Length: 492
Ligand code: NAD
Image 1 (cartoon, protein in one colour):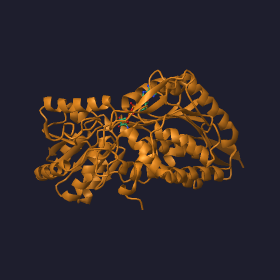
Image 2 (tube, protein in one colour; image 1 turned 90 degrees about the vertical axis):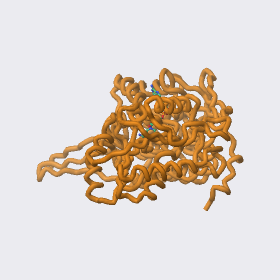
Image 3 (cartoon, helix red, strand yellow; image 1 turned 180 degrees about the horizontal axis):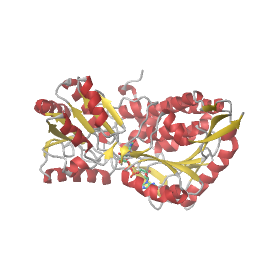
Image 4 (tube, helix red, strand yellow; image 1 turned 180 degrees about the vertical axis):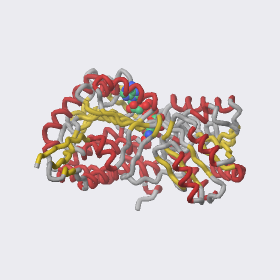
């Protein structure tokens, strides 16, 4: 097995990114590009083709041709084989992809190579296997008639992605969309174009026919993103990103009545009862707070601790957090890397200042680490003495910043946990099974973990309640979204 020490990322150099349309890498028609910046060094990684309506039109036209052509006609067993092969090639090219992901995002290489890239491969393996198990419903009306449903692909699907887990989240959409027989046009996040670019080549290597997978780089509003959401030939949009962007996309997509699937923001509660095993809680809470620089939609940024355990938790959690090494993503001792961009870094720092204005106490962090002069690095930050009215407790910060708040009763913590327009995920820590069931049944969230975090079975429904999402992904739920059902009624 490869260890962190044996990885040699410098063999892989950052790449310039072109669009991938109809099986070819192409620049924008007007040759426009934008710069891709390394968040850990603030240096230029390369140039990215800046697409717009013209490139989206070209990509949708190619995807439309491919849909009625080879992809749809291919036997599903052959399609599954190709999809599985994409996963295999991702694993074969794991070191290269992991390095590109870390250059782009600033996340530690150990994280890209142990989570992002293997899970991206697994998404293809999982959906290739899952499609083989799909059946269809049949309803018999005594001896009068027999109904059965046919599952058919939708056509061209638009996939719009965020920057925090670039290839992992992209493949979570591409794999089921292809497995269901659709063709796709991908708009990767502008901050993280590199692994998406390579995915085009990998699909081709695996035998995906030209035009089935297309990638157009660019920005969101008035650019490639909005052109994709407005395109009349795009049948559905699967979007992961901010809640406010989801609203804009819904408005744009309403003109052509597109099917929408949304995975949006979160402000997730991590509820810790005094009877839980504190050492285990702290070990997982360090991850659920700061992994990927806190830039994971599922991070538990509101930590509620039962008062009897509050002081002990804060003391141990702060001590453990202070030991976290922030630094060069390619140094295997770095537990945390850099935030994605200057703009995002400034926004997160602004929230820390706001916390102070709101009376919050910064228990640790809140600053750039002294040894790092360049790059968007921030110490993991813990805030106490804040309450449900504070903006830092209400709003998604999407960085390594958590608030710890004490509670006295179960009713109180359920009310506090639900006091938000978000409803993505929650964690509950207790050794009392009845309480675990009771509290889990009352928390308004799409995903709830008991005594764990981020444990995923890809067959289960994944998605958010309230303003954290629309619809569910995973297993059958992904196929429901990426396909259409026709009922056929035969009179007997
Ligand atoms: P974002 O909404 O700013 O951007 C996401 C994508 O949408 C980008 O590709 C962007 O170019 C595009 N976009 C922006 N405006 C658009 C428009 N008007 N029309 C079409 N496309 C547009 O989000 P982000 O900053 O990249 O990602 C962070 C957010 O994503 C956080 O809120 C986080 O919680 C959320 N997220 C959610 C999940 C989940 O599974 N629920 C997973 C990861 C991230």
